Image (cartoon, rainbow, N blue to C red; front, side, top):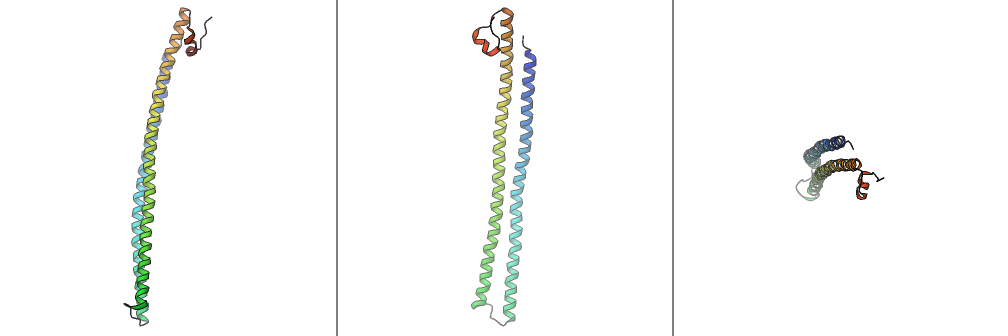
Amino acid sequence: MADVPSILISSKMKADAIEAKAKNDSRMAEHNRKMAEFQAEDAIERGKVEEAEYRKQISSAIGSQRAALAAAGIQLDSGSALEVQEDTAVKGELDALTIRNNARREAFGYKTQALNINAQSTFDNITANARARSTLLTGGLRGIAGTAGGLANHYGSVPKKDQEITGKKED
């Protein structure tokens, strides 16, 4: 007769190992998801700092323009002097908005990564649970088949249909 307890214990141990690996993988995925979320928040914060610094640079550049124009005795609030200042301000604003937009795009990439990690983790857990159940079911069926084959051998006949399961042939 087949060693049914060994078959069942082996199947249970394999199923437990599958579940343990799934739990570990899930913890790692959760860590990776949190890191991607952190990176998204960091990208936004870095973008805010960079945007603010750039705005200061533009203000400083406009101040330098005004000082140079005033030193040359040029009227600051009209004509081409005003146009130069407005042009610098508009281009500076566009660049500042580009910095903000780039930071948001970077953050969006990290948030998408976090969502993908979460979805993959969920799928992996479902797959691992199915594999663990399948391992238990297969082990149980092997145990039943081994017991049936052993009983049939003991009582002297193995029906043809059961030969495929047990691998035993009638004499």
